[in-house]
Image (cartoon, rainbow, N blue to C red; front, side, top):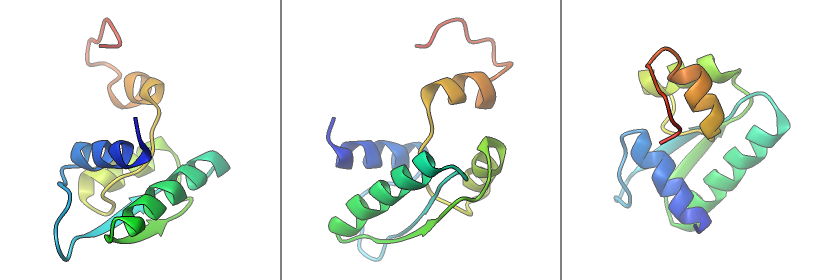
Length: 98
């Protein structure tokens, strides 16, 4: 999957659609190096697509970023499927990764 497709996937999960004129995206990242780098990659791909983007780096951990996403303070952030399953969707009765 190309980097732009990953970004589009992240943004769709966040409730946004691409492309749109005047769209401004705020990307967040956790406070560890790999997350910041992935956030920078996401921001760079968006900029290359002509979309205005701000990267809010090193905001905190999973709960902080998930809360910011749900509150609309950020539009997207890089997350791992394992973290989504074990932390964000914990207690939802998931029995498989699918």
